[in-house]
Image (tube, rainbow, N blue to C red; front, side, top):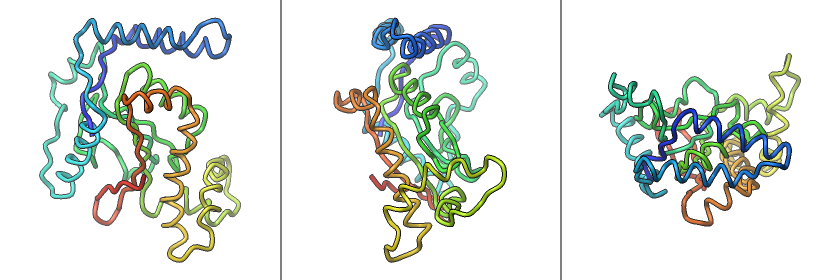
Length: 239
């Protein structure tokens, strides 16, 4: 696992991000231009980029502290708040479930500015989620991307049961059903099997992104899937 990531002036980051998205919509602005500008900005402020493995190790070590109740609560001081007023440099991007029991900064014992959180029920890779992750990976330069599922996930359970749900609550079910179908009929608990299958499936959906694939193939990004155990607090890699 790696840590520390990229420094990007807030205004520059927003400008680059909006410009890149506009380019995708109009075809007139190349997203690569934003990438080059972001890289130049990082170099100008002398930010040391961590390796993907260092970032992964940092999350694993933090989770070990969490499970052993030896928390350090890093990067939560007044100085850290001030440090982040003009720039952010997360060392990892984590796509996790919106479940209140699975907060990345807590279970990995990290602090402000350490993790670029993308949270949605069922940790699904919707277009909006993908865009958020591409922003973190491409413009902020996070060297680690983790898809994090969790034990007894309500969204996955709903997909396994596949029954009627009120309002827009069931919109995530369609995004999870392909994973459920992959493990249907397998021995063991259907929901538990589907949780791991969903992590792998959503990771595959993210890997459709050319931006993410390019970063991974260049060695600048590691993509992993993991699941959180509600009973023990342990995070285990599944991909």
